[in-house]
Image 1 (cartoon, rainbow, N blue to C red):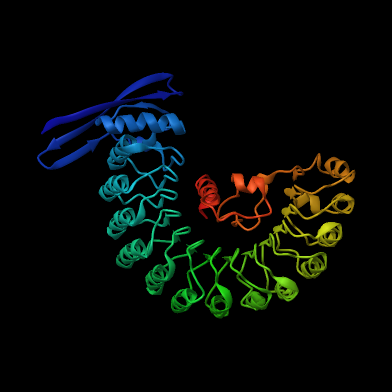
Image 2 (cartoon, helix red, strand yellow):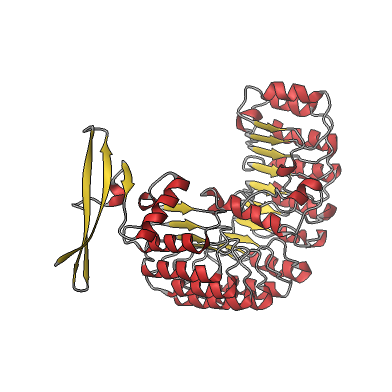
Length: 505
């Protein structure tokens, strides 16, 4: 047995007030490798200051990552290098780091890092050599295309792979890449809980590939996001049919920015009626839903916790159907987003009347971009006055409001302010009553937004808090009332979704 390599690290012990020099040796005897740390695992040393690696690439990666995140990567369970253009050299270094047997990352997030298909091959090769710890992989916003997805798929096929969350938003994937991905998932489907293919033109064939995976009884997918995937009404048939055959696991479904139309919504409505289908979060933002389609809202309301219908013309009958849902004692909706739904002051009354009958569950309400005006605000005050109301976030951005005196009075006279954490009144021409509201909220825990903060404009692109972030693109700043379909909205969703555990759902 011969000494193959030696590397050192220093540990500062605040108890002993001393510096120890610890030696980690890798011994090589024929084909057998033995790693000895004198009984100490690297990730169990809380005061590690410096570590020198055997390989120069891994050593460079250590210095690079430490400079960004402020901590030695061998001690990390999560590594987020989003929006850093890595290039070939950095990717090779990170690849060497991932291959290190001491590396036990659970989460790897590389959103918008300009990773190419070739670099994707290097990364996935490293993950294949050390796959058992990784639970979350996010490569969103990189042009890895179908070839890159095929490399990822090879990793997923490995029986040692226990990946639970996979995000490939806006990766230029078509139905070809989708086929490779779902084929891999069929061979090893039991671990994956979240799949996000938003922003890829997978279209009809891609949806069918995803549907085949969902049919598998071993599939336990809980979150499926197919936002902006060019899904049409007919494609919904295959998707909902698959979910009917294996309905018990899915908890979150995002089909936003797909033109579902009459038949698409009908298929979805039939699925929601299934008592075994226990969906909790549903996003149908900008899905061309008209008021006659809103009968879907009456289907199976007891499990639903978050609903986003932003950017759909609900009309009076649609709002009435929504009111029936909200007033039901079975309804336990916690988050409701209705941005830019052309809701009028009269329709606002329908909503608030329903909420007054069942207000104890709702925590977040967003009516931004609807001309509810001062009268609509007065109706909302009735909800705040309800003793059961525990609303935490209220967004009334671009609602044509000029007077908030009634709102101020309601907040000061009731216990609503005990619960309210965020109040967004941005982009309303509020007059003298503004100062009264500021005074009332000054000593509270409520964050107030009053200015023309176009970056807060979310109508038509809002995700649930677990779905992602806000539109902050330049086009939104120029004309916040017109939502944009450009990739800028996509990139902001990516960055925000990679920042916190909340955004990973």
